[in-house]
Image (cartoon, rainbow, N blue to C red):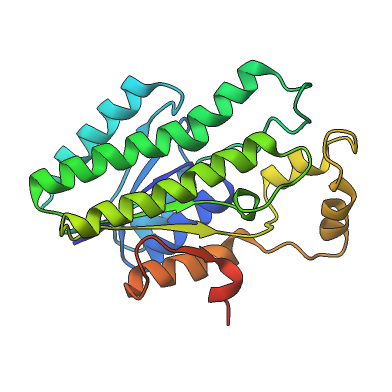
Amino acid sequence: MKYAVVTGTTRGLGASLSKKMIKEGVHLISVSRSENDELKVLAKEWKVTYRHYFCDLLKTDEIENVFHTIFNDLHQQKAETIYVVNNAGVVEPIDTVGRLNNKDIKRSFDINVVSPVIIANVSIQKANEYGMKLTIANITSGAGSRPIHGWSVYGSTKAAINLFTQVTSVELTNQQLPHRMVALSPGVMDTDMQDVIRSSSKEAFIDVSTYRHYKEQGMLRHPDQVAEAFVTLLLSGNFTSGRIYHVRELEL
């Protein structure tokens, strides 16, 4: 049986990815600080199992304990193929270096880098222990590959995730393990994160007018559109481990 473990499922892309997985007949495990009741109803409608685990991704011990429990439960369910989607993330702080809040810097790296690395580490460890086949997808951003004024922290966290994806894939290949890891870049979507970006000052984020224009002109992708492309790719198995896929490459 196929299972998807998705973080940050309350809204936005995480909710859309979860819905698409359910509609494809994949059993869902949701991980976030609050539960999305819509997913529970949808899973029942599509006759797949659903379970939610409450987890604060700022707490290392909690992440480790939750994912040990998840994989122990998956072993009991005789899961064979598992998709782990590290979706949860924050764009803040948006500002120039010298004006950043140090606590916000740490929070960004903890959520965007530390938590997905821990999740991947535990997932691969448990998958090896139980003989499972694992695919890990890390949600990234174009900001991780180019400098953007005001996004030094966010861009750095995504650059770190990109390299982590690439190095881990090399290691999996060298160890002849069946697991694969990719990074998925969704482009500009109509989500709460975009609301945060558009509320920035021009001093903090020099390109803020461009992002406001995207919204005004209806140029933002809907999260469901992005989820359709990403889940189709993952379930097809037709992807290269270690590669960073941009949604525009996958859309018809």
